[in-house]
Image (cartoon, rainbow, N blue to C red):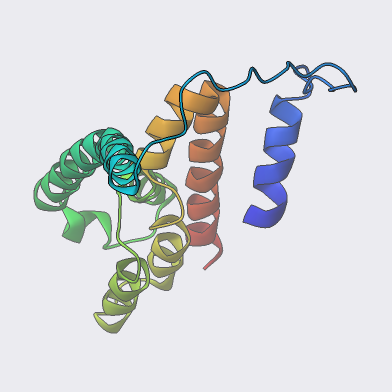
Length: 174
């Protein structure tokens, strides 16, 4: 489903902004080097390491911050939401609430499968097990933030809505 829906959605959203075509001669000339090429290995290595460390920090800083905030938010939801009452019976409203919470929660790899399996062994309705299996780990608030900020707000909202509806439908079917 992701292989068909996501590329189709991106193509539909970007249909008004085609990529510019490049033609022969459009590229700019590369000016000749003005500095001497007498740099030693260790000077080049030091500059490379400095650039690498700067780029890693540029990526790690927002990612770690968002992951910590999302983890604290998810832990808060796990404690404050009355899960026993919410998962006791499959109703459209309960399924919508669980689907919304599950889509927003950032869940590590493997936990997205282990958590629904554990709930199944505890006797939770199979609709909720399918809902959590299809929503946990497929999309969360973290990629939504990156898409919202760097790609397209409409794409971020559309994908959140798609996974919310997919989870809700799975709960209603099963």
